[in-house]
Amino acid sequence: MPRVRALVLLVLSAVAAVFPAAADCELDFSPPVEYPAGDTPASIAVADFNNDGRPDLATRAGFTQFITVLLASGGGGFLPPVQVPMGRDLHADIAAGDVDGDGNADLLASSPSAGPSVPSALNVAHGNGDGTFQTAIAHEIPEDMGGLAVGDFATSGIGAVDVAATKTGGWVLFSDFGNGLSQVEDNDLPVNVQATPDALAAGDFNNDGNLDIAVSYSATGNVYVYYNSGGGSFNAGPVLPIEHPYRADALTAGDFDGDGDDDLAFGEVDPGATAGTKQLVIYPSKDSSTFWPPVRYGDLGLSGSIDHAASVDLDADGDADILLASASSVEVFLNDGTGAFPLQRTFSGYSHGFAVADLDDNGGPDLAGSDQEATGHVRVLYNVCALPPFGAPANAVASGAGGVLRVTWEGTRGVDHYQIWCRTDVSTRRYVHVGNSVTWSFVHPSPNAIYYCRVRGVSGPALSPYSNSDLTSTFVFTDPALTPGVTRIKRVHLTQLRNAIAAMYTTMVFYGTPTWTEASPVTVKAAEWLEVKTALDTILSAAGLPPVSYTAPMPAAGAPVSGALIEQIRANLD
Image 1 (cartoon, rainbow, N blue to C red):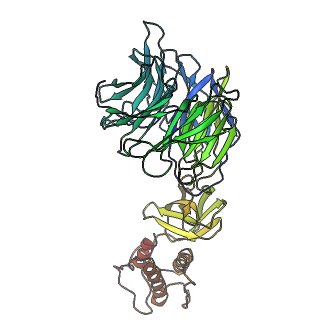
Image 2: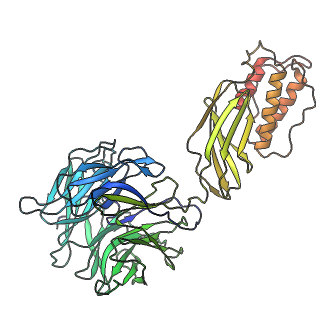
Image 3: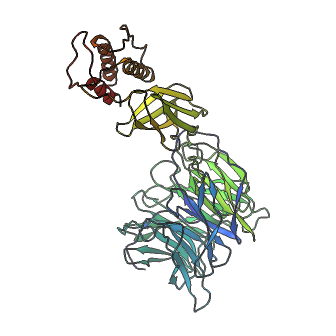
């Protein structure tokens, strides 16, 4: 078989994913939420098709030549479905990924042979980046094609992902090295088989930085591993037995025991048993060329066949968990941190097809499936295990008038205290720490400034996300800007300076407050000014910042203070 360069990453019916870990949470999913998806939706893919930062969904429209796309509308919802023609009837798998390196997600679908004049093909509709797609292109092969996996299997140099696909008797790899997608690798299983393998998964099984391939073929009772030697050239690795008479119809890969190597997991089903006996099988990777003996977990609560598998951290404890899905439910195996899975949970309401993504932007991986009904739907099970264990403060609002910046927000559970981040359009950023309150006011002597603020919660070492976006407010202070060397500082200026510095003492968790012993006359003279200057220098020193460097001369005792000094104070408070 040819030794060629190619490119890599992920899985097929098995989806490997990593989500940001925070603290442990009690795993749970919402009841299924349905979204219209057109005619008999089947397998599912997820990608950001319109480059708005939200994951969108695509599902095969039955055995037609169409893929149905559902663009995200925000908050976990989706817009009405749109059908994308793929040029040929689709009976197998779909996927999504940027296969041409232009920064836009493309649609991929495998189609079987329809006779001598219409061979099997990988059909690609290149994305335009706005949720629309170009006319599909068929990349034909002589053998029937089945499941798909996208990932960076080689170094094409153009930022594209590759596509691995099962075919009759083995698997193939497609890559784009700058001159269009083409077949670059063709691997036949080491046995004479005349059918398409059952499942395909990708993972770095020998920890060399290259994605490898695993293919299951139940007719021979084995899973076949192929090691990527670099650049997308593969060598046959170990053959892992499937326990007779079980089938392995869904594979996934993940580093379950935390040793740096990806391990292999799949669901075994006894098709001859009345109830369809099922078990989870894990082959831990041992070294660069072998696996440890398998570990099995039986008595699964799934009905029917096991159609899909995935590896993802569902409960935010930093360990890869395993999901096995049938047409009616999902079985979740929670990793205890050692690679063992003592806790199993079953969630009903699942359906055909399978995708894992944070669809509602709460930090937790959600599950999407399709119901394969004539007037079909995509069903989403939203992960209600918040990551971290508290969400971003909601409905945060900034406002200001008369020299007072005011930020309010809704409280969120599990918070020790809050952090507010603020800057102006002309100043550097800063953090301001406050207590367990849902409002904060700051007297700030910076006239006509635009402020940008965000709020987040703190719980021990964990931080919530920030409030959704910068809170913007323009502040008009009660006094005009001072003309350096001309305007004399008056009572209003001194009062604002004193209030601003007192607020900084409080928010920076100083003990006590500055004491003002001097009176506040109409025109501020040196004594009152020096108190403010000393207090400001104290707080700057405590924050590890240098004192204010005054270019204007200090006033003599009893003399009025010029506007130049007040403006320099304002610049440092900003």
